[in-house]
Image (cartoon, rainbow, N blue to C red; front, side, top):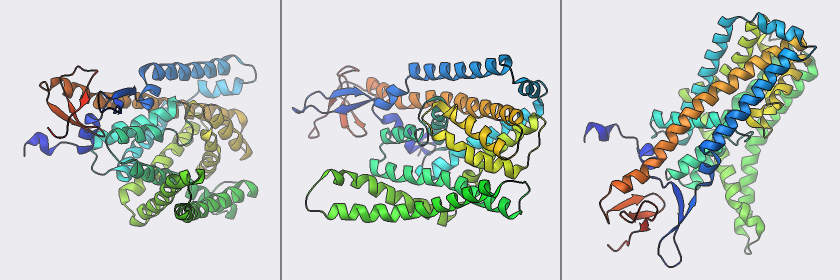
Length: 403
């Protein structure tokens, strides 16, 4: 085996071999019809460019409003005396948070994947979350799209996507329960209303129980639907219910296995992002307790579920509102949250754009490999079988398997 073969990445190779369009064989067995990949079109260069312009415009509006609107003098004063060292620290924390996403993605979805390919897909997801109005789990769709083009079965992707969502949410929920109870009992430093600590903690613990129960309920419901002799619209929910049940089981299995790298990655992904907010306060010469910043972050980030680009608007209002409820001055909370959001949005967006361009190039190699083949040379294409080259770049046809 050559050195090049030894270093090859099977996932990257399969991604590179995936067709750049979704093909459908004509009824007569002739030339397949081609249709643009829907998700690729949604993340085309023009769409990404418009998303960047939108994000820049929103940032510019925020800057102009902060500078010109009356009543924000204290916010401007905070920014004028910001500590650049702590801003650098906050940026470093965000970089660590973003990088922690990569090993978590690789361990859950495919350990055969090279670190380079894992980085491209995971970082492209992070960028999509910052740039596009996907909200909540929407950015995971990019990874689903890439893995499906790479040949991973749809059922496996669905199961792993559910598991990954639960695993990345687990540190948030667990931390909310721990910090809420710690503040309520006086174990952790910081003063807060019991309602602001016990209620979130109770909700978090309820969410843990509900997630496990959801898996059992989904499995029982799916079995009942499958056992029905007659088919109905409800039977269409079977695959969704099965993926949910299997995803919950896989998430629990991953946690029981206790892979140290996965645990560190999941915790680091959340913890480092929280420290970005904490360092933003430090940069503006404010020093709230870490526990207060932590619980405010966990509650305020619920605004990220709104279908807005990067959660812009919802996250800011949620974070500032919760911080004020925990006793921080409005001006201080506003300035710190704005600084935090600039770092949290722009760093993943910049890294994600580069990664997505690299991912698109990886997926386009298939067309080049067909063009380089000699006429009538068959090339194996994932999900399409052998394709005859030499028919023109836009007119590949399925090979006769009897050849």
